[in-house]
Length: 167
Image (cartoon, rainbow, N blue to C red; front, side):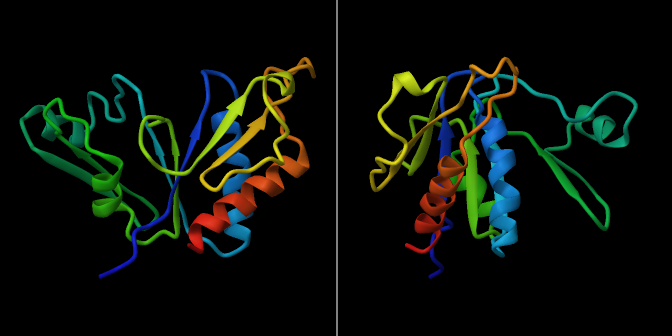
């Protein structure tokens, strides 16, 4: 039986920098040779297809699964009948070829997680890592609407994620 693919959640309040952090760490993990998957969760409704496209027409006609592919990408739209699939099911059926999955959201699930805060005054030092929990904080005092992360925090994040890959 194959080993479960490691999952690391990135959690925090809205606009704290979760997406920014994931965007910064993906290329660092890729540079180290890891294959990385991501899942965005907790969106009540989303639409990736739109009227006028063949895939939209097939879905509206009642198809249970619709896909579109090219030499570079594959997109699958599948009816889930008001029941959102679990992370485990999503990964099992779609992420078998990655080394780690980074998930933005799903904070109630029992996976190792990185918790982001708005400022350094809210938390203990980011260097105080626990086995399955790493706290970091974004710097919002720069005046920029895009949070930044201190370099040691990014190094700790990569070490934390690698420790989960190697378990």
